Length: 301
Image (cartoon, rainbow, N blue to C red; front, side, top):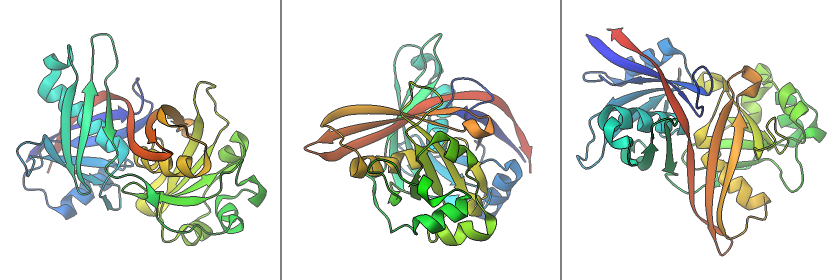
C-alpha cells in the first residue's frame, strides 16, 4: 500500500535548517510496531502519524515516535503537524485569517493557532498541555559534568542550577556558564545514561547567545531515545518555563523569549516561549515557531 508523507523543517523559516520532521498522513491499518519501524527508517528525531480524531470536533489524532520510542507529547511535531494540517485543509483561509487546529496527542488535546499570510512564512503556536512542574532531583554537578565532558565549575550561572522539569516530557535542565562550554559538551556513552537516570534527555542552556537578539542558547541530547542531538526541542522549551520561574525574577504580565538551538550541528533553530505571569505565578505558557514544508512522497509498504 502506498502511504503519503511530507517532510518539514520546524522552528525555521527556511528549508534545510531547524528540526526535520516526517509526517505520514495515510495511516489506516498501521499498528504500533510498524509505526516504530517507519520512524526508525526515517531516523529523524521524531516522525508523526496523523489519524482521524476520536472526537470529531477536533482536527486530527497525532502519534509521535522517535527512532526508538513513542512519546506522549513533543513540541516540534506539534508545530509541524499544525502547519501541515493548516495548509492541507485551510490554505485559502490562511491567506486572510488564523486557523485553529486541535490535535489529540497521547497527553491530551492541544490547541494550536496557525498563520500563513502571503509573503510571510508559515508559523504556529500552541498552549503547553500542562504547566511545567518539578519532576525529580538531578545528579551532582560532578556527575553531570563528567557525563558531558566539561568541568563541574562550568555548570551553573547566576541563580541557575541543574533541575528537572516536565510539561509532558521530563528533561534535566543544565545551566552552563558560557557558550564555549556548551559547544564543547558531548555525551559520554559510558556515563551519560546513569548521570541522567531516570530522565533520558538533557537540555543544556546558557545566557550567552550567537544572535544577540535571542535570550538563551541551548542544546539537547537524548541518545537512549535515538536522538544523538536534537536541533530544536519544543517540549523542552515548554518545561523550561518552570526553570525560568524558579531561577529568574519574572515580572507579572506577558513575556516572550527566543531560544536558539541547533547551531552546533548546522541546523539553526528559533523557538519562541511565551509566558503569562500573574501574582508571581505562571498562568499560561505557549511555544511557537515557523515551519517549512520541504518535500512530499510515498512509502510503499
